[in-house]
Length: 226
Image 1 (cartoon, helix red, strand yellow):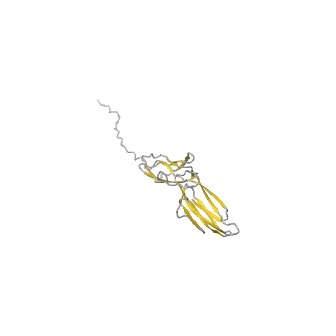
Image 2 (cartoon, one colour):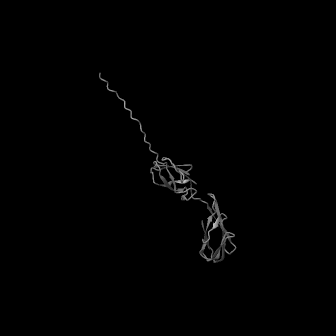
Image 3 (cartoon, rainbow, N blue to C red):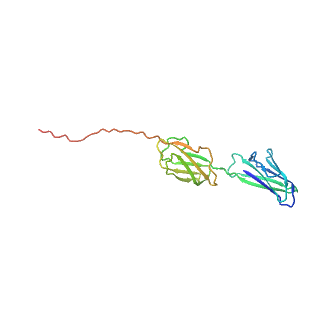
């Protein structure tokens, strides 16, 4: 996440000792090298997790300070990230400004059926994909090599599971499938716990048998002459 703090002097005199301190949330980590500012002096203290800025602001002048943080792994979807900045104008006036962001996790593929590496897959087996959250039912892109064609999709479980029908697979053939989709918020599918693309193989070609039947002829023997 990138934060930008704007300081603007709306007064009728220059502010000589303006200050700003901005503490990033405990659930985030400051990204080194991302601190930028347009004027004055800025720095950061890892121990207190604080960005500081100081300088003067002429009448109607503006200064910006920007930096980036990353959220800690494992934060659940919807976790609020609250940041507060203290701005002091040098004339005994202090202002607090608050910014709130919400953790939005990208979707991942949780399971595939057939699974990666599976063998002996029936020719008419449906392809079932399970996602980590509700997905946008369109667009959904599935590529198959080779491609049996005839694909159709049916969504279920609040749009977290899609079942894909297709024309019959070929015997004794490896298939490699790749899926791409968006979640309901428009976030791209990202790598997850199962491979994407993944490969499986169909049933082996059935053996051919030759069946030999004896030929039996039925008829009448000619009558004997006396």
